[in-house]
Image (cartoon, rainbow, N blue to C red; front, side):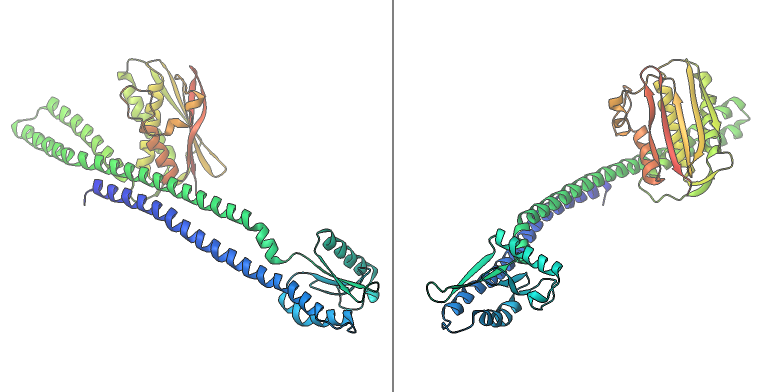
Amino acid sequence: MKSGEKLKTRDISHSHFLTLYFVIGSFIILFLFIIYTNSILLNIRNEVKIVPDLYAKFISLPNDVNLEDFLLRYFMSEIIPNIDYPIILADSLKIPFSWENLEVAKIPFSQLSKKEQKFLLKQVKKMEKRKSIIPLEYGQEGEKIYSYVLFGESKTLKQLRMLPYLGMAVILLFSILGIYGLSTMRKSEKNLLWVGLAKETAHQFGTPISSLLGWIDILMTKIEEQGNNPEMLMMLNYMKADVDKLQLIASRFGKVGSVIHFQYYNLHYIIQETVDDFSRRMPSMAHKTVISFESRIEDKEIKIDPDLIKWTLENMIKNSIDAMQQKSGEIKIIAFEKNKHIHIRINDEGSGIPKSMQKRIFYPGITSKKRGWGLGLSLAKRIIEEYHHGKIHVLESKIDEGTTFEIILPME
């Protein structure tokens, strides 16, 4: 299967996954919501049933029955096993004579401590204020005796009150997860595009480069057979060096999306080698640009892919040279260690980057050059942050004064 077909298949599967997430997720939330509300309604039905049962028993009582004894018996046998919320039985003066699901000893009210008595009376007032009170009348007209049943808030009622907030939280979480999933899939698709583009570029380079190397070897053999021609050999060596450079570029593109093999390497030498390469090319440029390198990491080795790091540095220096816009000036590179990280700062005296562009400068396709693809800085960011778990950013930039980029690489 070709890489394009793989990308297309993955795009379709991502789209299907997102659709299934919202459809199946909605059904699961609805199903759980129905189960939860039915459970609450069943609990409410059982709790509400207690009151009519109490009235039914109460109405059928003969007049000579002691009301407090009846309430206590009924309370202990019928109510207590079926409730999980505070309940208080009080006399006509609203003085408690029995209680349940409260952290107070079950002894006569008069034997309780002042603190416990005060707590119970406070609970009575609280329940009465909430209108969670049932008055019970007993006796003949003019000789009526009153008792009261006071009750607290049940867990079911608390659950019912929390239901709208719970629903909102679930919907919000579901939406956030969906948006995060969509964002992740889009990022994954971008990564697939990157990898596909890089590998296809490396593949397209591979065949003609191999062919060119073969032709160069044939030409060298022919020249040697026909007699020594130093000028022609020198030109062929230059050609071979350029083809080797193309082969290196193809190899670098091939590493994008592949497993990177890290090794401990002295970063000082990589930076110095890159600076030397550019310095050799400077005399051929119309404008005079000087590249200086101040190193404080001569003896520091870190785990990196040297080829990819050099590629990043080349892209950064090229970007600085382009920013100079045919002006003479200096590009300063400083490398130092700080907090177990290697910092590399690349400063130019170019045109600068507007503040609105400083975060977007690393996005693919963002470029100020007429013919550029806008991939150099984007590749640099990918190599530093995704492969080496470091950071690359615009440290400082002023219009018409210059820009300082900073690369930070962990030493461990």
